Length: 332
Length: 259
Image 1 (cartoon, rainbow over the protein chains, first blue to last red):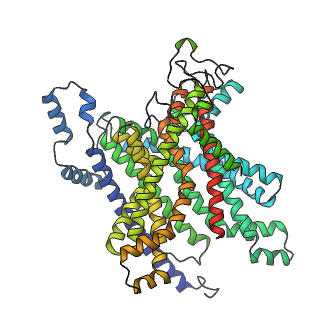
Image 2: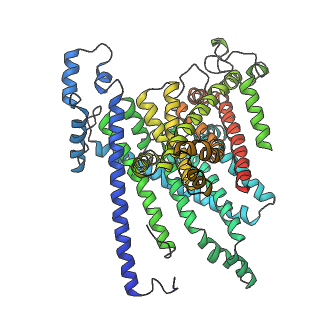
Image 3: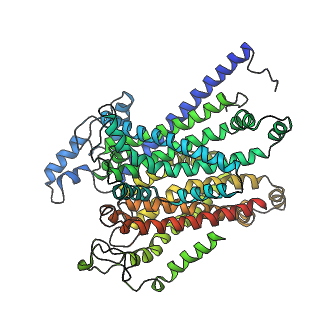
């Protein structure tokens, strides 16, 4: 491939076109998967005994009232009819009302999502700040004491259950510093200081695990890159170590690093379910758990749909960023 | 090496729990509730006076057998489907691939929460959920294995000898894909353990009073400031087991890559 590729205007336009087509194709695949997911979720929740009416009325329910309630929720219709009705409303942006709380589903999912997104990005930031430098250090001191220590941290961090780290941190700060986090969640727009003190322990417990994964990944990539010809050439040319590191090495591990960040973000989304329940944060994970418990189908369906779409969007952004980092990458 | 020693230790605990504790994991003794670790109760006692050491030791068998059976089921089902799909190709391959994409588009823990939450917290449902979560991974491995094997000369040779498709698949391809699947089992085991424990911790796994590690941690959660030993030791048990499995899994993988 000629080195001036991407420099000419015509080529640039052509690239933009193919990029547009690529994004459209990926978004179409995303919609298909989201639809399939919604079908699976819809069938799954309706295939088991017990529904919201049973939950509301209890064991000894009046059959007349139960029948009326089922009609009210549309549960008396065949499943496919319920699904098409739901889908039709979702397409117009109407996710319905929560069956147990009577609030609009969209608002509930939105405010829960805000909490989880804050948790996820704070964790990603902290994990990157801890993990990447540790990985670089370990790679520089490969085989020596510092490397071994960092590798120990990685192994332990990956083996420890995230909720256990959370519990131990909770115990540690309350005995060591005589401090415990506030119990009621406050959004950052209301009181930033209090919000941060609530978020501190959940973020730290999630970040320790991900930092370990990060550091291991960065170390592995740098160590294998150090053996490559371009690094040897750079050393032979007499380039200063710093420039080899920052202009050559980091650039070359940028693609795997971005992929990894995407993976980590999705992992954090999963970990958030556990951590939110431990620290009583009103995030998406807790919303999903409570909607499963109460069989609040509209909330559950919307929440799961949001999770899947986010996970797939993260993957799409990751793939697109390859192209920005390295224009040689062909999107297909 | 450390991994093997730790794993051997864990296996001894699983096989002979009686060697490590004389207490029953289920005997309630309210007079002795929330006692700190002592010579009588090395790991202390829980909120109803049960010996935490006994619960952790006896829990090993329950927790690990759930993980192992889910893994084996996932490997068999995912492996078989993957082999079939990769070897046959065409529409079936595409359909199965799409289904797998759906499962993989969820973070595993959320899928696990969904399945156990909807089906109800029972041990059988837990095994089912963990199996479903890991079927796609084995499917992909076996599928790509089968596809690369299908193009090999020995398959072509077998075909030209007039062997039937199913015979080639079962006799030859399986034999070559099996080691990859087995190593993957070891590599995935610590992840399954983490998710199993997390579901237990959320109350969606094994139900009390059965001593499952995640379930013990769930009970300990409310007493974390009063009786941290209730949480510390089962968590350590998970950590040590996951560490052992990770080390052994990595060793196996390295050995296979060298070949």
